[in-house]
Length: 435
Image (cartoon, rainbow, N blue to C red; front, side, top):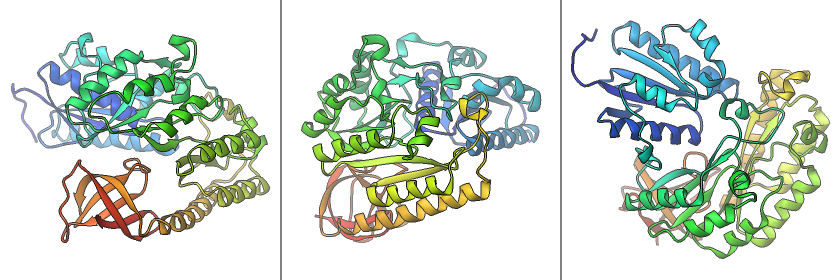
């Protein structure tokens, strides 16, 4: 058991959930460091205080967050740490329930409570630090959150309840933040938001994602800009044109489509149907034939009959997405879909997830085989298990394919771009050698 002392407290920030949460943790850590606090990310060694940045997106994420809270409460009771604080989406949405069910947490904070959290930690919120963060990713890439919240009303999603409405960051602030990141060695910017395509409507009166990109590509040192979480309805076509003509903007788009059956899409309140979806995908591929499209789907949504699932499955087989993930639907409190009967049994939902992912594995294997013998510009993130692990412009960190180079045969500088010839391919990995 650790004895209490007067030494400067070590603060460990633990992040759960998506890259937007990671960005928030980096901002929190930047503020703490500026207040002369000792802060680390996901490192239990010598930690006195733990801050858990929770996720509340779906059932599995909530469970993971609660288990993490309970783990650190046990550590506190064992005397291994002194205090546990909880922030983030789960805390924003369920604070009264959490305070009742897990009262041993020292304090709960919501997604907009950063100044209050800092105050409890003996730190002051410094407004002049806007854009400053303590980067937790490898130093050559970083996330850039261009807006907070969401104005969409998708029936299954509780994000607006946890994050509020869309608030875009001004272009000049994002450019300044990008310049600071570039000076620190960042070469790849990954733009994130709940909906990139909505960017600018609230502060400029029109969609200005393309205008933002035009300014970001001017930043010296930034070589790749990647787009995450675009919404299909109202997609700004000028972004496609800019992506086609600007080499710094990766030919990559993460665009969650959720389903293809028009009745399901209508019930989901997505604002588009099968015809609109397929027309948009055709526009992408006609303009940029080598564009990599990543999407996510939801199976087991209320009313998803076997026939409607088969339509989805056939569409996935025909469309051949480069990257694809699947969620099993779960009821979320206070959402529109909660009023619907959750009529697809859990075992069928999980079977449908497995069916789509097995289908996608075959598609990915087929697409990867076509890359054997080709050379790609890659950036390398780390060395692990005897391999250097890198990515092409068509792959985002943690979620997409990786390029493996044998570290026993070749030497590669981490964080550097290098051309790699692909010699082998599996379902989700490419194996190659420097050209």
